[in-house]
Amino acid sequence: MVIGNFSDNQDTQIYHLQFGDAPEEMLHISSYYYIDDVVVEPKYLPPSAIPLPVLPGFAAEHVELNTTYVLNNIQFTFDSYKLKQSSFETLDHLVVWLEQHPRIRVILSGHTDDVGGDRYNLNLSRNRAGSVMAYLVFRGIAGHRIERYGYGKERPVVNATTDQARALNRRVEVRFVE
Picture 1 (spheres, rainbow, N blue to C red):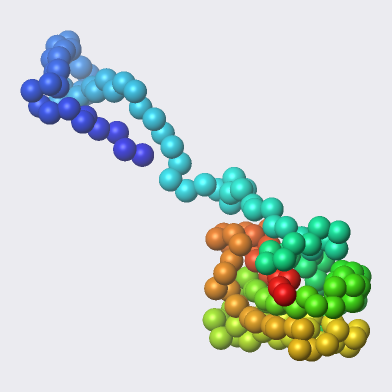
Picture 2 (picture 1 turned 180 degrees about the vertical axis):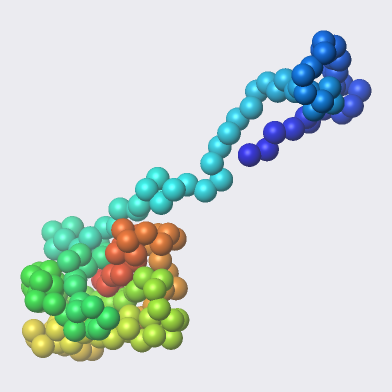
């Protein structure tokens, strides 16, 4: 918070008030300031006040080329790149879409949150994108149609350390290209 007099000394008006006898010595040497037009604004927002972005999620009926989508509901075993069974439904929708569009290629991007070392997160994100790629190949999508990259914690969606922000930052994205 900044409170101050932003006028030069010539424009500053000073009024000396004479007080009667004060019971405390400090009151004889103290000052009283009248300040008008004060604005108090927070420098840092609390985590709950940070607006979280809405990421476009993959939906087979709304795919545009050269647009990046988050593969929602892609879950991995804690601290690993093993896909949880709950991920298969979303990935199966992606497989069906790719089967219906055989000339389209995909770029998979893995991302982690800010917990852990840079090298560890980079490897984890690559391996998670690799697990999604392996699933697609296992389901019949040609490997030459898929590229995969890992970015670790380099590209967060939200620059915050709340659990909600970290959950958004842990993701696998897909981009459709010709």
